Length: 313
Image: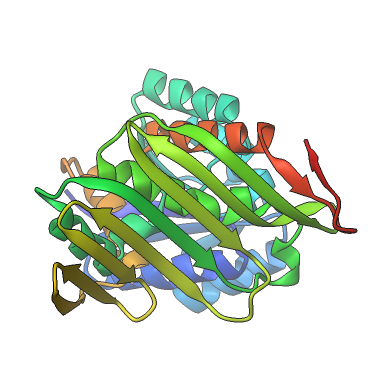
């Protein structure tokens, strides 16, 4: 099969990262760069010229290709994906793919009815540290996990709850690493600033495994950590330094993870799937399950208001 004709929808900062990565895959003969689509046509033109796409367009209806990569703002993901599914054989949608499980489920039903290959943009699954952590967990009896995803978000992202922006990555990772299909929220605390949750701490049980998630969009330091408690000891994975510490009994060791850049690995998997390969990757089914958890933790949250008052939402 020849190169996959690929359309990029979204020419913002993340869209540019995607464009750069698709150009790398073009150099390997895997993709043909078709269109960049954005409501800001001048920005779409700029990206198309910089990264070697054939053309630019102001709407999805003006573009054509076999595969569409949706990398818009969170509030535009659902509508863009819905339109792309009607025009393409393969559709990749950045996380969280929609703002509710009902919307994500509609995307799933539409994609499967049309036989569209679909993938959800849960990038962390392709991080070499996560891949190595998954290997280390094989055969271990895990009883608890903690995820920390902390970093200062740019001003334009602070209009979105951290529960839709940062935390979905780790909710998905818990499903992935534990091999579970269901989760139940046990507690949820949201700290609100500007009317939007900027910090969140939530607990869940994944079929008997206790999991805690912490997301913070204000801290001026980037932290991405996973702690695993197992019957034979503890594992701490640092996704920033790509170092994993293993403590079992009185013995400790370190493992350094290495591998392909996660975004390239993720998009490579998408292209391979478009070409007919049975490559493992998160899809819209996974996105639906993640958004069910997000919806439930939002429903059950205790909210810390800007003036410091605690009350049930």
